[in-house]
Image (cartoon, rainbow, N blue to C red; front, side, top):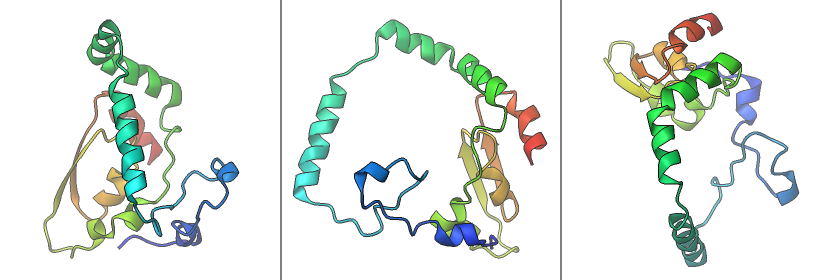
Length: 145
């Protein structure tokens, strides 16, 4: 089981009461005591409809698809493993991933593993296969952990 620390104990207990405070923290747990309504369903449908009318230029879309690896290469060359910080949220939000005996064999596949913030905590307990588009992560990830 993952170790708990004082920071994690607070994680999940923050509630956004004032809209102006939205950027004061990196995460808010408004879903903890959230009730969905028909009005919110209508609003969500409207937003989906509006979003469905916005399209990326076909040439740009093809370029981003074709050059995805290049964009990720540039991103990680610039940020290395400093961009995504380990927030220790995985064991809080998905405790079932850590609830297995050491005798049980569990396999997990993570796609888009990035710098390993999900993979490394899971590796302590499980067998994990991870994959990412960026080949340079093979060099970056071991240096960060």
